[in-house]
Length: 156
Image (cartoon, rainbow, N blue to C red; front, side, top):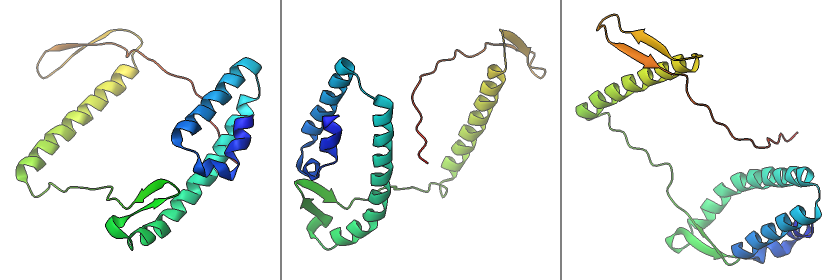
């Protein structure tokens, strides 16, 4: 719990990334040894993350405007680096006929694959299907299923 109190302090701004990781490691170690309230702490973290992510999103435009006025569109701030970078670069290949043709083939194959996956998900056991046009038979099996478990936090 001491680590969570430290995270609330202004000192965290000056803390190097490696020390932040050590703080988390220390908290988790204490939690495993001494116990605590991990679900409550998870909710606290989720709420802080929501608050900080919202603030970060809204500050980006202001920061970008500020960075445009500096050499190389970058600044060293509080021992860290902020740099204006290009993201979300998109390319349009539709002017190339060969690309359009290949894209159509890929799209049709992707649709066929999704149809096969949907069919296989509905199966309870191995099934053989005969293609009426070609007479070929295909064996389909229900897919192997795996999953993982996590905690979903809904902030209200």
